[in-house]
Amino acid sequence: MNKGVETWSLYPLFSELTRLETELWDALDSSLRKEHGLPMSRFEPMAVVDRLGACRVFDVASALAISIGGTSKLIDRIEEAGYCRRRNNPVDRRSSLIELTADGRILLERARKTVEAELDLRLNPVLSQQNTDDLVELVGQLRNASRSAAAAERPS
Image (tube, rainbow, N blue to C red; front, side, top):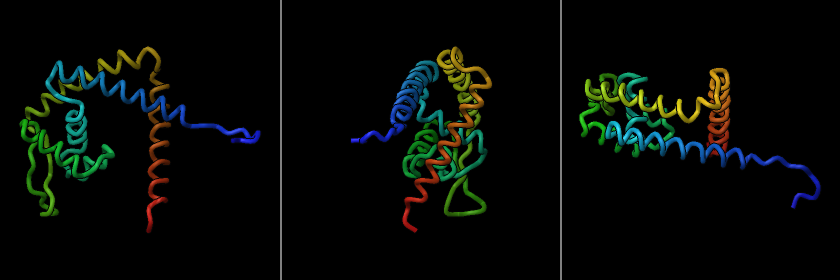
């Protein structure tokens, strides 16, 4: 019980962000599967590899904020489909570097158009370019604050 002290709950914001992410993920996943046979769970790591260039599983996992083990399994599946390849890391023999294949780059380019069209349909009616830029900045700040809080909680 609050005893007259006014508090402000962030849970409604958390709930709305979570539902929005789920709705957008499901819509994008459905469109990508239907048009390209590519689930969103493979699109995301492919987009990271494309953005970073030759990179390690660790780099993809960090960019997506998911586990290294889960990322390694995703990369295995993308590689089995012929959309990326691993090569020896010349700097660190314990790891390999991931890069998209020509087929992977072509698929990703097509899939990006689908993602952009779906996001345009769902978000553009509400967001101006300035709103979008501001929201990207604000969500980035929230993620940074969340990561800082998580790091502070970890034992030294």
